[in-house]
Amino acid sequence: MKRQVIIALAMLPLSVWAQASGPTLGATQANLARDLEDLQKSIEAVQSSTTTSTPTKDGVSGITSVDITKSEAPVKAGASKSAETIMTVSKGGKYRVVDKVGDWYAVELNGPLARVNTGWVNAADVSPIKMAAGIDVPVNSPAAPSTAAVYDVIVQKASQLKEKYRNNPYLSVTGFTVNVGIPPSVGMNFEFRK
Image 1 (tube, rainbow, N blue to C red):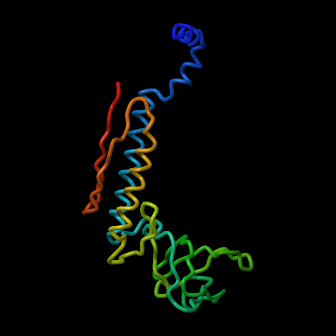
Image 2 (cartoon, rainbow, N blue to C red; image 1 turned 60 degrees about the vertical axis):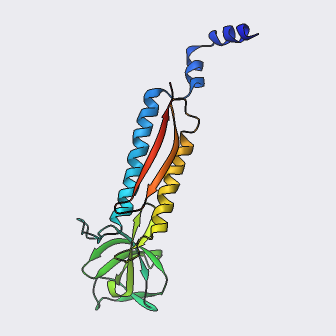
Image 3 (tube, one colour; image 1 turned 90 degrees about the horizontal axis):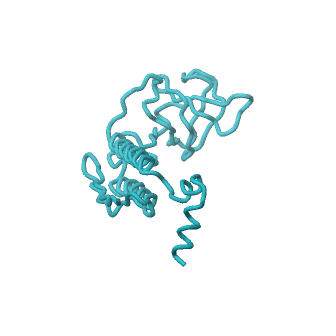
């Protein structure tokens, strides 16, 4: 019976063999390199989120959104206290930042208001937020991000990597350790197969 199966498999076209055999060694190596690079970028993003922002060419400094901290914050038509107030927003609202000029953030409004898609809020009325490794991080917050949040993000990404390579014919991730020191890091154990 085994001989018949082997003969039947030997008669299959080469393209079927390639599909059935799964990933190639070269593709596995390239994917692993990309995955480890992505993991490193996530760790660096978490690390950089604990430091003060440095301005970028657009002036936003990596800030992705703002939380409104004033009970009723005016949204202006321009980056000035004397600019027309086009609406007010309530404390707790979150708005995506599209630009920054001085102490003013240009934010994307949740719905166009008389054909206006953006407005300006004063920095004194908001708390700026950066996105780091999938976590919203308050800028210059002494506890940002928390050790638990850093740990959770790194463990989640390392677990995803372990699951991705679980049935790979060339390698598997047999374990990992997470160090949430400064800088945070992860150690991964691989088993390479013949």
